[in-house]
Amino acid sequence: MSALDFLDDELAALEARHRRRWPRVVSSAQGARVRLDGREVVSFSSNDYLGLAGHPAIRDAARDAVARWGVGAGASRLIVGNTEVHEELERALAAMSGTPAARLFNSGFAANTGLLPVLAGPEDEIFSDELNHASIIDGCRLSRARIRVYPHNNVSKINEMASSGRPRRRLIVTESVFSMDGDRAPLAELRAAADALDAILVVDHAHGGGVDDPAEVRAADVVVGTLGKAFGVYGAWVAGPVALAGLLWNRARSLVFTTGLPPAVAAAGLAAVRLVSGPEGDARRARLRARIDQAVVGLRALGIEVPGSAPILPVVVGPDDATMWWTERMLEQGLYVQGVRPPTVPEGTARLRITLSADHSEEDVGRLVTAIREGLAAGGVVRST
Image 1 (cartoon, rainbow, N blue to C red):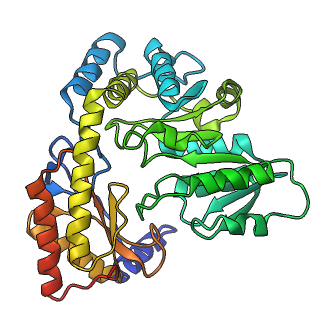
Image 2 (image 1 turned 30 degrees about the vertical axis):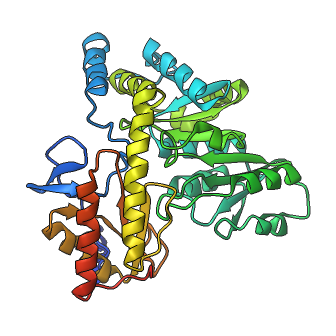
């Protein structure tokens, strides 16, 4: 008898509920086509929306940086792990975000869990959308503030939920594009609510950054962005006033107490920011928009209603086992669409999370729609109809 025997029981319980997860193995560069578990597939599961993860200019930037800076940062950026390329990337991120300053973090999760406890504490109040990402939820918890979870995108509830007493500070926190639903926050309404409550509006722009015009989140006081999605690299940033960037150096535990982002990753991020901000970024966004429109038209023709403003198209199935039936069936046809189950999404809303890339072809999206049509004919069910 071991004190760790419970681990097997926990895994068995997950298996029984069709919720045990394990990673598949990719043996190629990321892209619209990948080699997954030994077979070539068209991937509709990556967040590499602009198809930059394997871009030659970004790979060259990383290679050249390794030759100059080596591999690891060696220490926290506050000690000896802060290179010129980290500083240059932060300046580029601030310029792109239209803010006075930006502070680089190792991941989006680290950014949210580092930022929110800096902005709020036990004497404060945070209003958080019920569908916010786990990193926002954990960041709110770590702040020890009073947390008010409001119904998804229901801004009118924020005023109703506000405490009668005046807290020291109030925050409203939302994603700009919601990662599992592909819909958008009503940022203008949230800005008005924040003004009425004298609150700080924090917007996580992870799934909109690089795809949307940066001006779309200018309503926010603080913006969190990530380099690991449309920019095709890794890392994240917080954009806002100079004083915030300075306080993050001193109070954000996920920034202070960790080794800095590898210089080669920072160099790749800098190359990606330049690409995304230039003519090639415009061309890739146009291609992505065309593929989104094609997929939306095709799915709606099947009676499947999906949002169409972002490259995330959720097809809600409902039961976990039925969702994974779809994933396996489509994989047999050379298409990889990840089935997403609770606790990532609410109970009873397991889904196919279709994500599109600028590198998908018209033929790729046509195959996707055909596979779903044939799956429905074979008895597959979806709830998004």
